[in-house]
Image (tube, rainbow, N blue to C red; front, top):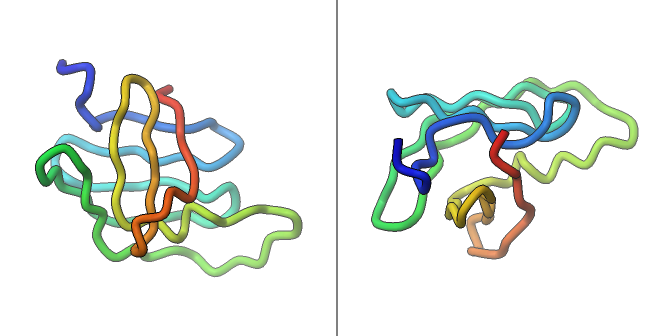
Length: 94
C-alpha cells in the first residue's frame, strides 16, 4: 500500500484513535466516546464527514478529536484540523 495512504489505524488503544477503512468508513474514540463517521481523500487532504459520537461525560479526558473536520498525512503522522483549518492534534500511525 502507498505509505501516504490514510487507510489504517491512527492513535493508541487507550487514547484518541481513528480507524480509516478502505470503504470510506471511519470509526474511533476520543479516549472516552466512540466516534463514527466517513472520510474521503480530496487532493492531498482528507475530508471527514459529520461525526456521530456517544455522549458520555468523561472526567479528565480531552475530547479534542471530536472537532475533526479535515486531515493531512505526513509520513506516519495524521494531522487533524478543525473546521477553521486549525490543527487540533496529531495521531501516529499504529
